Image (tube, rainbow, N blue to C red):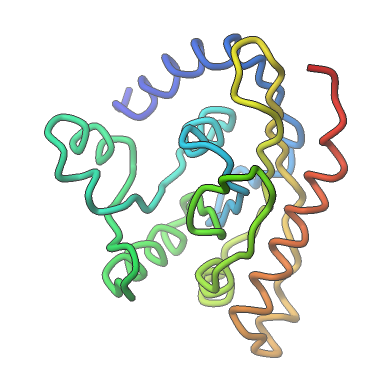
Length: 197
């Protein structure tokens, strides 16, 4: 058993009852092959919650500063995260992310680039479209819905993979593809936001 698998099992056993997490659409996530999993970002715990509810391991880009913190940095690294320099065009991080997808893994991404302070869906950055166009990965939209409050229901919704064939053929821009991904995330939020707490 890897450290990631062990950590995921422990955290899930705590978080699932604490936040009454309900996972919807798990069957939409391909069981194999590269997957670009794109989610909205409402809380610092999003990367953990998005990852613990699915069977496959999820890789993330995390801000470089985290890896410099004693102990925590090592734990983050052991949980399949790799560093990215924020605010810069980090070519090494881009190459690493494309490699993750090419090798058939799941890359978790928050297209907004930062946590929403209002909880509302913000504008997506071109990075999501870049990875979608530059890889053959399935693109799966995902939505985190609900408050992170103890014993209040939190929903994780995994949408159906988006059809990227024509967009890749016609060489759509990264910005256009990101907008489409954000539109799908928005639909998931609107479809599932009504629930009893």
